[in-house]
Length: 487
Ligand code: SAH
Ligand code: SF4
Ligand code: F3S
Image (tube, rainbow, N blue to C red; front, side, top):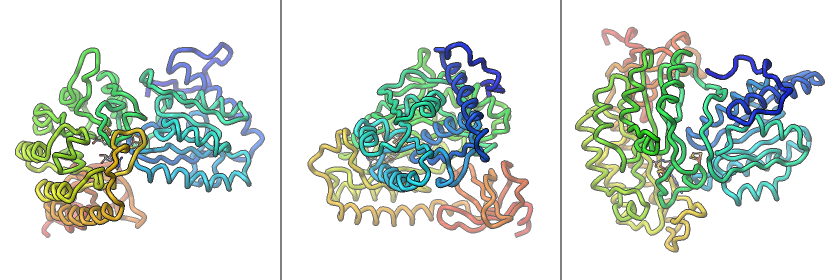
């Protein structure tokens, strides 16, 4: 990475710098020295517990927070109870995500009775909502620090404030002001990594809160992205996942616009990189150029996550998705014609306001025709402040539940059939984890399908040809090709 090797060398005598990321480097050094002093009176390191809710955008921001905490000298623990510092990166895309956080807070309030020095931090999307932050201020005064998505880069500075001030620190920024590059980042895997290519969203789908909590779309400069990927590859990464809420509109707002397809071609040229993935593709912006680049590429995985949301053209219009049922199906056909082995996955919502039995039948119809490998299904959740939340024709819960169950049954049946097309083929698998059962490895094909197979853990991070012997729905049982020759 590009940040200092040793934050201890940073001179703390002058005032903190005003420019970023130098300012945060200063606070990392300051926080490190504070913890060192604190550690002298304790017989264990300062331990932190970090839980992340929501999507990969949140995962990425958590990696920065963890990277900073590691530099400061904190040690990560899996025990919420034992932790001196418990951090929660929140999501608010559906009501359930919020409820989980309030559940944690109930538990923490009890723990804090016995551990008054335990510090609690809430950050991320949910905190970007004024009413939620206000509720934390008034009803949960034992929370020590609250910040949002736009000032995540300032975590080291906020950590210092939290350690100094005896009261609750709330620091929220309504709008993003900059993209701060080159902060320390922890990585969950040594061989694969997510890379943000853009932040925010401009689409304002009528049900969705993301544009309100993540702000307007901002793309990173291609040079910054390529530099990060090159450095990851030098560190041993061979698979990258390019991340954005709508990667197909990447680069449109740059001073010198660059298309997503062009960015992919540039990433493809990086030597040592083996696999490229990306998420999420909005169907309205998926270009022929992208399909062409994917079809010709040797590195881009043949997997596309293409959220459809609904199969009803009437609802799609109301949702502000800018495509119809026919457009979606035509797009699927075009992609399959160019990349016949493509694995398609999707997101589907049921119970959107005004959804009739006919609208729902259209959704089922698309699922029957599109042959998705997997579909993530959601019950519509009313998000305050979004246009759909104000609609008087919310669908009764009972009916939604019924539709959800029948959608899920169809999705599973179709998914099983679609995924099983690889049975008895040999696929290249990137070995990701060793399962609890010793000697059993779990890896992923380019199609994003999981495979469990016997093997030794020296294979972690390696690409192995595996014979897919038995499909169990969304995963396979297999055997290394070397072990099953002649079968
Ligand atoms: N940017 C991506 C989606 C990000 S949110 C895209 O446009 O495709 C991930 C998924 O959550 C969405 O695809 C949608 O299916 C679901 N979702 C978003 N808002 C929701 C809501 N209010 N209720 C239920 N599901 C929702
Ligand atoms: Fe939400 Fe739509 Fe943006 Fe996706 S594209 S994040 S669903 S507003
Ligand atoms: Fe949730 Fe925020 Fe992602 S609301 S889904 S964590 S962008």
